[in-house]
View 1: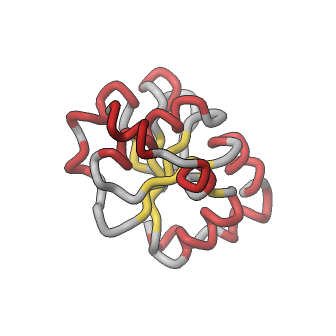
View 2: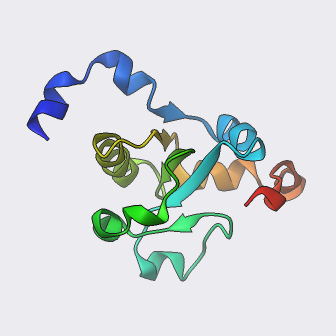
Length: 123
């Protein structure tokens, strides 16, 4: 982890971010997977049916559930825990990004008729 932190630059941080609009575009192209890293008590209340749900504390033991040929977009309600998940996945050799504004921003982006913008047949 120390070497990983030493190697980071501002460029790395900037390229780790993805907006809700960008996510929808990449998801529709089959290029990305949404990783919901919330805890089970949170996902029981509401979730994104197209997301892979792996709680942050289980992520190290469940890496095999994630595709290595797609960008993993890490998401939590805002983007605090997703920062941790993204950096961990990058360290493990995945291509990963942080959903800016988190699941709340994505839910807002897909509100009402805009939900049709997401092509769920790709999920």
